[in-house]
Length: 280
Ligand SMILES: Nc1nc2c(ncn2[C@@H]2O[C@H](COP(=O)(O)OP(=O)(O)OP(=O)(O)O)[C@@H](O)[C@H]2O)c(=O)[nH]1
Ligand SMILES: [Mg+2]
Image (cartoon, rainbow, N blue to C red):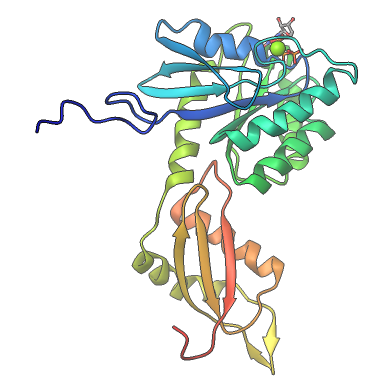
């Protein structure tokens, strides 16, 4: 018996799994323009595939050697229209697309800044554990003296996803658009990354000395005895600790974990398990 071809993950002969991308954001920020810049100009659009559970059509395109499936969001391919108004309808559809995506492109009109709706999108991204890249579009309309303030305001508004890189683009002039695909790829690499247990625990021996874990049990400070990465997409860690760890301490640990291992573009999950001395 000769096997003539191997089916890929998506059921195509020799095909690789596509990366699912959702382009989310408020009405009029430039989602369709960016989408057209990203795939419309590409000679290599592969095909459109109907969503199985939605009345939408996804687009598959190859950019720089990566196959992407753009998950249709409201306002991405067609104009949003609904009795409740495009703002509401767009948000609902964006939230659904986020859950179906691997990575989310959050598009913001740089001239208007991030709004409450963008915070909701960011919160959903963090909650559903998706990778993300933030795009400040219409950068051509931004005066140079406002650039830093706009970047700062965006960070503050999107504090649920401080790990997301921010790319400045103009779909109009095409400036910065070429930086989007590499940023998506980097975020995805972080999202899928696995750090060996030995490397984590070597790091832990130094890190815990620098992060006060706060909580004490009978005046004895909490110790993390052991750390392991239990999963990816997003990277998920299990910490075996002698007691509870305060939220600020956990955030400090996450910061140091990121500094050491570089997880730009992905949320991380840190699960704490209390373990007795003999547990590990
Ligand atoms: N100056 C400038 N205008 C832009 C840019 N990108 C998009 N526009 C304009 O902004 C308007 C909205 O662009 P769209 O791409 O339709 O925005 P959208 O987010 O898809 O909008 P909805 O589908 O309604 O949600 C259009 O008039 C575009 O020409 C940009 O980078 N700079
Ligand atoms: Mg649109």
